[in-house]
Image 1 (cartoon, rainbow, N blue to C red):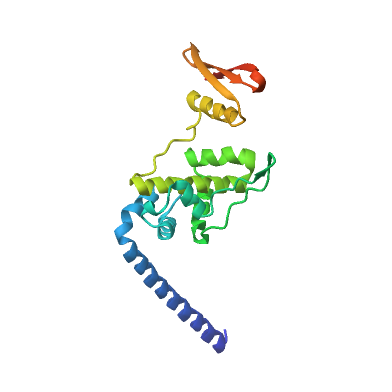
Image 2: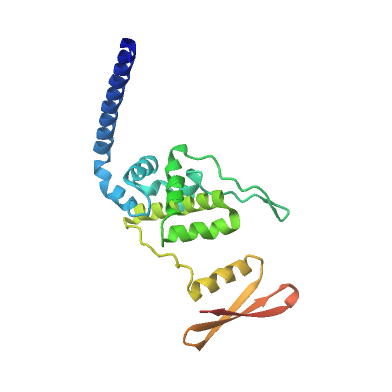
Length: 222
């Protein structure tokens, strides 16, 4: 190694040492400013795959006081994680998300990491959306869900509560889901249920179709 090579390496090492010292100062200042909000940081850390650095970024951007937002949908819209509803003449068009706070990219990153977690509600939600809409939209939908969770957690000062992978498998949730889907098409639904075995629930659903036509469907839930 020649003399000028050693000199250049020395300059690079000195610069690296300087940058590391500057980073230590910045991190120390961040810790000082976040000290009054450590309880909120710990709350956010209870969400699967959200680490301390991501919690600090999210809290720095949205703040600790949720009263400045009208609700969790407003927070999601402000962050640019609320999909649009572009429909004309009964045809759905592009529903791209709006441009929001670019510094909140930590939320989609956390959503992608949460999709890899095992046995969690967030992973279950991600793969349920991915089947129908693809990976990118599933990531944004999961980030939207996480941000709305964060709103409730910070507003009510409660930690994340894990609902599990099968949080939607109960018969009640399934019936309510399909009834909402049918009513969204403009139909009227009347429901009655009876149990034919200890482990099987039968739900009879009467659907009022246009022009006074009636239809009846039977759903079985284990």
